[in-house]
Image (cartoon, rainbow, N blue to C red):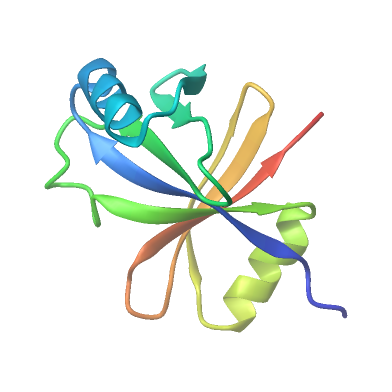
Length: 118
């Protein structure tokens, strides 16, 4: 099996007040707010890696306030590859054209493998 392509996409920050935090990060980085989808906001990229925010009830209760999001073309293949390296599946999601899995590395740090359809 060939190794699936996994590309770094964004650093995700868990926040309580997503509107205020989106304004803050947008102004700080000098970029516009891009995609807003449910409890998630992605800022326009400034180079190769972007900043994204997700609303949580209690950031301290969620493991890791910051985590990496990656883009993949083949989500099942990328998940299988990550698992073969020692990653563990935490959750799977599908929302408005995005499908992603939340995984942890061997030390428990969260990251997401994201497939954007269409």
